[in-house]
Length: 337
Ligand code: ATP
Ligand code: LTN
Image (tube, rainbow, N blue to C red; front, side):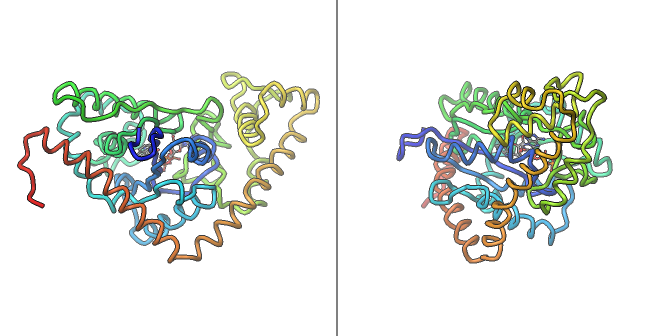
């Protein structure tokens, strides 16, 4: 709970890697936008996390602006929420180090994201990639977050953040709030369009697998029309037996707000083609206003800098309080003001 507003605290982050996808929107961003009125929200561009995989510096810098502009275009309002870049607030790296000293090798080796990324980047299985969940726990615990809206793939990382909070509190007394995950009931795991057995991922090398929020509407329409569906012709939601069509039904449901049975009933006996055509249109219409707003914000560098400056200063103020307490509890000598 934030003492000044009496609202529960929300914190979430996205790595500036690849291209923001409709999976990131449906699994996370959409809920960030919704939570802004009822919660005190902090949204972080986690650039320190992004360098666990090698990044080209120019691309990374450009992508951070792209992502920020897209957050704002999707409805994140800097008047309501604190939006900032992780590397602008040194407490993130500071608390991550402390938490590294309370995290066991065994618990990190079980992380599926680490195993996946290690497999994908065999020439660069670095310590940062391994310790990634401790940095994520630092992001969350620094702000005493109550709720962390994320997609289903982040469940394991959230569990570590909770375990670390409980472990630290168990030794030093009440220091950290123990956060809850908010994983949406629909669309928490949007699947790849060409390989519905894997998660849609914004760093996928094959652009046909994801729908990017910046895909031109024509490109998005074609990606939907070419998406893999299963044998059979009925529109159904059955992720185990019919993963391809179920994925499209869940995107349809998340964008339209309709439940699966209503969608199934509307397309009963009509086959895949009309369903895909309607979904393609719905996606194109959804993207248009976001892309228009994105164009405006992305051109206004001064505005983006002002948002990040205010965000970093608010985040530094709040995280500083937690950091002082952590250092005091650990027995570090206090720095003279
Ligand atoms: P990358 O491919 O670069 O590792 P990613 O697409 O997995 O990235 P993240 O930056 O790891 O995206 O995640 C940002 C947020 O979006 C997280 O809350 C994550 O759970 C959510 N998210 C990512 N992919 C999906 C998906 N396919 N469906 C639903 N939510 C998702
Ligand atoms: N690991 C997350 C991104 C992330 C995050 C966070 C999410 C970094 N720090 C704090 C929620 C809260 C991912 O999506 N890969």
